[in-house]
Image 1 (cartoon, rainbow, N blue to C red):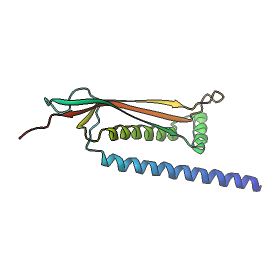
Image 2: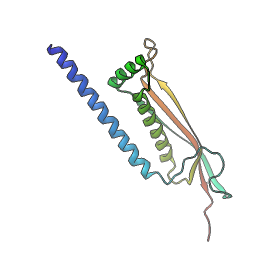
Image 3: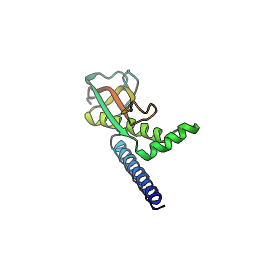
Length: 153
């Protein structure tokens, strides 16, 4: 009986720590998104400023690899068993995509815009023994940072 209680306490503590770390990461992402909000990131490949001359451009990338904690993996496995949305994986993908975009933006803080942005995701760390086990997810964001000719008065 004591062993069962110890295991349940450890599972609860692990779940609590994982949840707190995830919330801390989300708060950090939201704070950094507000700081970098002036730099537009768009998927279109045409100028967002009609008729302005692009003086410089370069490709930029940002990637993030985020791992799911063991306890959310257990909950996701149960959800896979019974069907429905797997919120633990949705949260994982959201964090990875947003983090990758922020890392891309931080490469070129002086750019006027980042255009033609694409995001790719992939699961990594799958074990050959566990075909449905997701270890981590990688998000790769890439686009073209552009600088426009400054307007002269």
